[in-house]
Length: 346
Image (tube, rainbow, N blue to C red; front, side, top):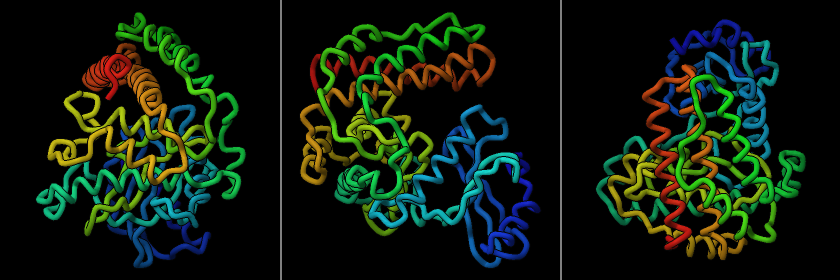
């Protein structure tokens, strides 16, 4: 069981030593979330906490990703960005066998899973949810990394120049896995050429979430506002407009790729269109949107390569085949969608 991934007795001692809470840990419950990391809700000393750590079988990058998540959440503590409130982090992986951190529970719901009656019954409220997503994204993009201690959190110099070569190399590297004969994805070469030829000349660096879509958001129970942006493992300092592109690439539509991340909210409908999202972003963010199409195609390209990685591992027997097959179909849909965008726009 996932619960056995944490030595709760050790955690009790850690909580007491840190002066966070004292007494037995009770009411432990797993929380569904990302496919890679584990989260548990529990109560200690009358207070509820959420623990987040890597999976039972850690990848080589997992602990560093958890350290980065904790660092960015701490840095954003006094900003208007909606996020979980960090309680404490343990960067020494020897304490529990993995880096972990504690946060306060978020009062809200994941709209990709299901909606309360208030939201499911009101199309206008769901439309406002779409614009509130943009407000949350704009709030993140407005934070100056240097003012919150994140000067060294990424490498913004040459960020856009690196994107296409980096993800093409990653795609080629998958071929090293036994059982995977190389990708059979459509449009890769033509999209790489288009992205290279149309790359924006410059950008304003800022904090990126790196995986900004509806399934990584919690909404307030009593209104359309975003309660928290969650799952910060891909965050960095780069070009925040790529987060906008990521949102647009996965925005609810008829595409398989979008439906997987929008879930219940996407199926109910009532959300703004991609064009409306871009126009609204231009009014609330201090960034130009002239190249929104390029960022959407780039996000589609990058996400497709990432998803194909699971398919490659599944071919090598290192991931479940049904999951690999499904994510491969999403990658194909993303690239097909991206090619259409280059020809027809949104």
